[in-house]
Length: 313
Image (cartoon, rainbow, N blue to C red; front, side):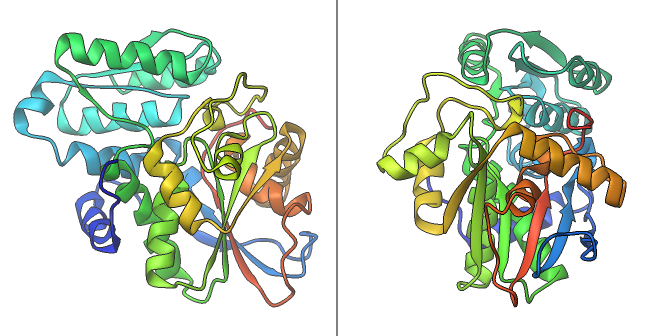
């Protein structure tokens, strides 16, 4: 088991990424049109560099590398957003970046990756298969592999989002966070619970990819036999031990939402707020709009809109 980052590591990450990632807006949801009694805020990581929170973890990891590692190059496998973040990190540091993607990644994301100067390889039906190919190439060619969710440096970088949210709105009671492999919710939970132990952290997964839901229930890593969701950035068949340990200890509940509920939430964000969120980016709000999470009237909520896109519109 790799060492779990503490609050001090997340604060160091915040200093590391400052100036290379954006401090994104935290805005109130339109309560007149939101079917919730609770006060709800939206954290717009869809406005982050490359369109998602992933830039935080990628930059924090890259800045920890030795100059020789940067020179040789970096590599990862991604459902799209982490790949964009690693490509961005490579561009910033002038480090060659290779990104492996599964076949279900939208063509628009492939084109965007190439604009950051990355070498793109499409292999496998799902992230796990692309990841096996990427790790094998990293070993063969001496490239530095940046894991999308199981690296403590990535987790600490994603945790800077939790720090930022509570700096912007310290009196929040609940954070609602989408789960793919678990890197985002691991970092956010470590930061939020470190600053405010009584805060609730609610995870959200697709019904067609309940990776952490099943793993937490079983108290062991579960590999799903298949994936059945269009939200490809929330769709690894298996997480990792470090993420399961953090989530099992710190996340209060994991809820499941359908693709259609994510799509409705993405449409709501567009029509009510002009926010273009991909299916996965709207997952946290989907848990609220669908009634999967029923807040108490006095609770103050934050839903993280974690990725930009138009696949939900």
